[in-house]
Amino acid sequence: MNRKKVTVSAVAWLILLAVTLIFKVPIGNLGYLNVCDFVIMTVCMYMEPGAGMFYASTATALADIMLGYGYFAPYTFVIRGLQGWFIGYLAKRKVRRTYIIIIAEVIMLLGYGITYMVMYGSLQVMCAGILQNMIQTALSAVLTAVCAPSAEKLKEQIFESDQQE
Image (cartoon, rainbow, N blue to C red; front, side, top):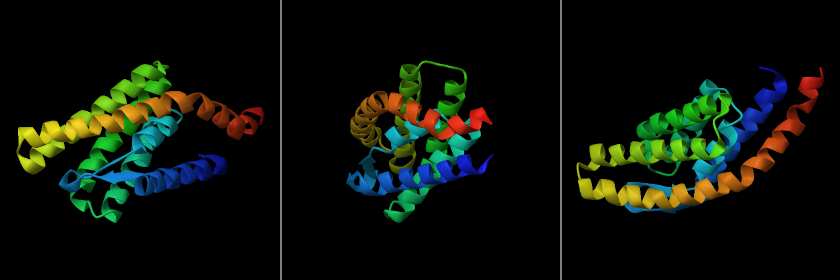
Protein backbone atom coordinates (compact mmCIF):
# COMPACT_ATOMS: atom_id res chain seq x y z
CA MET A 1 0.00 0.00 0.00
CA ASN A 2 1.49 3.33 -0.98
CA ARG A 3 1.83 6.37 1.25
CA LYS A 4 -1.08 8.22 -0.32
CA LYS A 5 -3.49 5.31 0.26
CA VAL A 6 -2.34 4.95 3.86
CA THR A 7 -2.81 8.66 4.48
CA VAL A 8 -6.26 8.78 2.86
CA SER A 9 -7.31 5.64 4.77
CA ALA A 10 -6.15 7.13 8.08
CA VAL A 11 -8.02 10.38 7.44
CA ALA A 12 -11.13 8.43 6.42
CA TRP A 13 -10.86 6.37 9.64
CA LEU A 14 -10.68 9.56 11.72
CA ILE A 15 -13.67 10.99 9.85
CA LEU A 16 -15.67 7.84 10.61
CA LEU A 17 -14.73 8.02 14.28
CA ALA A 18 -15.58 11.75 14.46
CA VAL A 19 -18.92 11.38 12.66
CA THR A 20 -19.87 8.50 14.95
CA LEU A 21 -18.92 10.48 18.07
CA ILE A 22 -20.46 13.81 17.06
CA PHE A 23 -23.64 13.00 15.13
CA LYS A 24 -25.46 10.75 17.57
CA VAL A 25 -28.85 10.47 19.23
CA PRO A 26 -28.75 8.36 22.43
CA ILE A 27 -31.56 5.81 22.76
CA GLY A 28 -30.94 4.66 26.33
CA ASN A 29 -29.68 1.13 26.88
CA LEU A 30 -30.14 0.36 23.18
CA GLY A 31 -27.13 2.51 22.29
CA TYR A 32 -27.40 5.48 19.96
CA LEU A 33 -28.49 6.36 16.45
CA ASN A 34 -25.91 7.93 14.14
CA VAL A 35 -24.94 8.22 10.49
CA CYS A 36 -21.81 6.09 10.57
CA ASP A 37 -23.44 3.73 8.04
CA PHE A 38 -23.30 6.56 5.51
CA VAL A 39 -19.56 7.01 6.01
CA ILE A 40 -18.91 3.25 6.05
CA MET A 41 -20.85 2.65 2.85
CA THR A 42 -19.38 5.63 1.03
CA VAL A 43 -15.76 4.80 1.94
CA CYS A 44 -15.80 0.98 1.89
CA MET A 45 -17.05 0.95 -1.70
CA TYR A 46 -13.52 2.02 -2.64
CA MET A 47 -11.60 -0.32 -0.33
CA GLU A 48 -10.47 -3.91 -0.50
CA PRO A 49 -12.79 -6.14 1.58
CA GLY A 50 -10.20 -6.72 4.33
CA ALA A 51 -9.39 -3.03 4.60
CA GLY A 52 -13.11 -2.22 4.72
CA MET A 53 -13.56 -4.74 7.50
CA PHE A 54 -10.74 -3.22 9.56
CA TYR A 55 -11.86 0.34 8.82
CA ALA A 56 -15.52 -0.13 9.76
CA SER A 57 -15.01 -2.39 12.78
CA THR A 58 -12.28 -0.55 14.65
CA ALA A 59 -13.52 3.04 14.41
CA THR A 60 -17.11 2.22 15.37
CA ALA A 61 -16.19 -0.15 18.22
CA LEU A 62 -13.84 2.51 19.61
CA ALA A 63 -16.67 5.06 19.36
CA ASP A 64 -18.91 2.73 21.39
CA ILE A 65 -16.26 2.58 24.12
CA MET A 66 -15.64 6.33 24.07
CA LEU A 67 -19.37 7.10 24.28
CA GLY A 68 -19.91 4.81 27.27
CA TYR A 69 -21.51 1.95 25.36
CA GLY A 70 -18.57 -0.44 25.74
CA TYR A 71 -20.94 -3.35 26.22
CA PHE A 72 -21.89 -2.93 22.54
CA ALA A 73 -18.27 -2.73 21.30
CA PRO A 74 -17.70 -6.46 20.64
CA TYR A 75 -20.98 -6.73 18.74
CA THR A 76 -20.29 -3.52 16.84
CA PHE A 77 -16.81 -4.78 15.94
CA VAL A 78 -18.28 -7.91 14.33
CA ILE A 79 -21.35 -6.28 12.72
CA ARG A 80 -19.49 -3.31 11.26
CA GLY A 81 -16.60 -5.55 10.19
CA LEU A 82 -19.01 -7.76 8.25
CA GLN A 83 -20.65 -4.69 6.80
CA GLY A 84 -17.30 -3.23 5.66
CA TRP A 85 -16.12 -6.54 4.21
CA PHE A 86 -19.30 -7.15 2.22
CA ILE A 87 -19.39 -3.59 0.89
CA GLY A 88 -15.81 -3.89 -0.38
CA TYR A 89 -16.40 -7.39 -1.75
CA LEU A 90 -19.58 -6.46 -3.61
CA ALA A 91 -18.13 -3.21 -4.96
CA LYS A 92 -15.11 -5.09 -6.35
CA ARG A 93 -17.53 -7.34 -8.22
CA LYS A 94 -19.29 -4.30 -9.69
CA VAL A 95 -22.59 -4.95 -7.91
CA ARG A 96 -24.93 -1.98 -8.28
CA ARG A 97 -24.61 0.61 -5.55
CA THR A 98 -28.30 0.30 -4.65
CA TYR A 99 -27.91 -3.40 -3.90
CA ILE A 100 -24.74 -2.79 -1.89
CA ILE A 101 -26.59 -0.23 0.24
CA ILE A 102 -29.50 -2.61 0.83
CA ILE A 103 -27.25 -5.54 1.75
CA ALA A 104 -25.10 -3.39 4.04
CA GLU A 105 -28.13 -2.10 5.91
CA VAL A 106 -29.69 -5.55 6.21
CA ILE A 107 -26.43 -6.74 7.80
CA MET A 108 -26.66 -3.87 10.29
CA LEU A 109 -30.33 -4.42 11.11
CA LEU A 110 -30.01 -8.18 11.53
CA GLY A 111 -26.74 -7.86 13.44
CA TYR A 112 -28.08 -5.43 15.98
CA GLY A 113 -31.42 -7.26 16.13
CA ILE A 114 -29.56 -10.42 17.17
CA THR A 115 -27.47 -8.33 19.56
CA TYR A 116 -30.57 -6.98 21.29
CA MET A 117 -31.98 -10.48 21.58
CA VAL A 118 -28.72 -11.81 23.08
CA MET A 119 -28.23 -8.87 25.44
CA TYR A 120 -31.81 -8.39 26.61
CA GLY A 121 -33.48 -11.72 25.81
CA SER A 122 -36.62 -9.97 24.67
CA LEU A 123 -38.36 -10.07 21.32
CA GLN A 124 -40.01 -6.73 22.12
CA VAL A 125 -36.64 -5.07 22.75
CA MET A 126 -35.28 -6.60 19.56
CA CYS A 127 -38.22 -5.25 17.53
CA ALA A 128 -37.94 -1.81 19.14
CA GLY A 129 -34.22 -1.71 18.42
CA ILE A 130 -34.71 -2.73 14.81
CA LEU A 131 -37.40 -0.08 14.32
CA GLN A 132 -35.13 2.60 15.78
CA ASN A 133 -32.22 1.42 13.64
CA MET A 134 -34.44 1.63 10.55
CA ILE A 135 -34.40 5.42 10.99
CA GLN A 136 -30.60 5.35 10.91
CA THR A 137 -30.70 2.97 7.96
CA ALA A 138 -33.03 5.16 5.89
CA LEU A 139 -31.09 8.35 6.56
CA SER A 140 -27.73 6.71 5.84
CA ALA A 141 -28.99 5.04 2.66
CA VAL A 142 -30.25 8.35 1.28
CA LEU A 143 -27.03 10.17 2.20
CA THR A 144 -24.95 7.42 0.59
CA ALA A 145 -27.00 7.40 -2.61
CA VAL A 146 -26.69 11.18 -2.89
CA CYS A 147 -23.00 11.50 -1.94
CA ALA A 148 -21.48 8.39 -3.53
CA PRO A 149 -21.09 9.91 -7.02
CA SER A 150 -19.15 12.83 -5.51
CA ALA A 151 -17.02 10.40 -3.52
CA GLU A 152 -16.23 8.54 -6.75
CA LYS A 153 -15.03 11.77 -8.37
CA LEU A 154 -12.96 12.64 -5.29
CA LYS A 155 -11.37 9.20 -5.30
CA GLU A 156 -10.44 9.61 -8.97
CA GLN A 157 -8.87 13.02 -8.30
CA ILE A 158 -6.90 11.82 -5.28
CA PHE A 159 -5.52 8.72 -6.97
CA GLU A 160 -5.31 10.07 -10.53
CA SER A 161 -1.56 10.60 -10.24
CA ASP A 162 -1.08 6.98 -9.11
CA GLN A 163 -2.56 5.71 -12.36
CA GLN A 164 -0.34 7.98 -14.46
CA GLU A 165 2.88 6.69 -12.85
